[in-house]
Image (cartoon, rainbow over all chains, first blue to last red; front, side):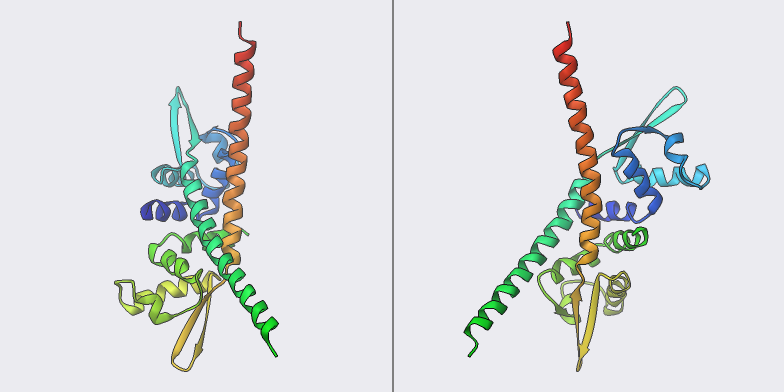
Length: 109
Length: 109
């Protein structure tokens, strides 16, 4: 799981790659459509796609001259779980501190 | 927000830095305690802490000879929100596809 989170968070640290994910959660898309909103050269864009593919976040298939890209949603869920766990532990601590403060206040002379 | 997510996801792409966050959600800790479980030199570990501090994920304060590190939980929530949004959009699409498939099945001859 360590390596999954390494590659997932690394892949998501770039705004172009996050924009591709934001587009693909709405459905598969051809490479040309994914590239269109980005003001970067196609080879640079393809390197971003390769990072996403290498990290298991997308897969693609070619039919004729069109390569269509699909999202693989599982890594998103793994990262969301990790973040949610950290938040729950942190919130649990805050709740305990608040309860403790209340108790001290009640028992104060 | 773009830059926040860039630096947050970049910071979280390293297992040592994630381990520090996993420790700090349970409460503040001195640098020496944070460093202890990691089999890396102190200067290397301090560079990881600096990445976390520069990305606004932790802050530290020195009292006497002890530097204590605290978590700043807000960036965790921002990233969790982003991931949750992607998941909800993706799940919405899956639900619509499932409803469509059911409809086609029902109306098939």
